[in-house]
Image 1 (tube, rainbow, N blue to C red):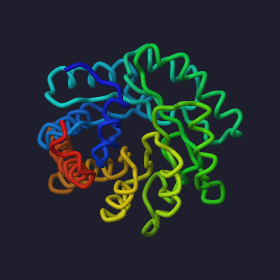
Image 2 (image 1 turned 180 degrees about the vertical axis):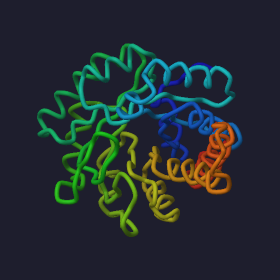
Image 3 (image 1 turned 30 degrees about the horizontal axis):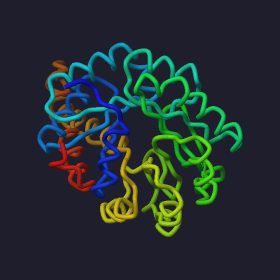
Length: 284
């Protein structure tokens, strides 16, 4: 089937109280792993590309790979820009066939974040492209975006309500204690803050930096209203460790297929696990 809009997937997830997995891709094997996992679990899925992935693989390649995967797939798939930071970048993705974009104005003032988000919405909504925005600052590093612990700022429920009313954005990424990259310890999520945000905001909520968050905490966040969960680091870990294991077993191996095949399988397995934790299995 053709690519679908992210909001189409999230609206159902919100009504039925599960979350759709949003998995970052960097190459062909990871795109294949995401789709294979979604097919095996009969789950809707969001394939995401960050600024770093676009620089590495090229936007045309990412779009072509994902569109082909969607056309051959029996499950609904959205292609989403993760952490777009400029209007020009968002429009580039929309023109190249992305069905969803994120405009991250979280480092801006409230006024400027609202203005940038509305500019994006006005430009892409008529194209059927859904828009995610962010309020609050999520710590850690993801590709070109770094927020240190001192800059990280949890989302204020009252500000979330104002932001959604001022923008009518399709999905809102919130900061409640997660971080991008590998965690140094076990993250502790502010569930009470999440509940207060959910009470004020009916827009689908997004949890970034979810790799390394305990399974029970993810389930709790979903039960309190999160309906999109982003996973990147866990996929990278599984992929690289599997490829490394092949080389450790045979340091003279030169066939990339012998390394990337097991890496793809390992990525598929971890994505399948996440889909079941999110409760989206069987929801395609």
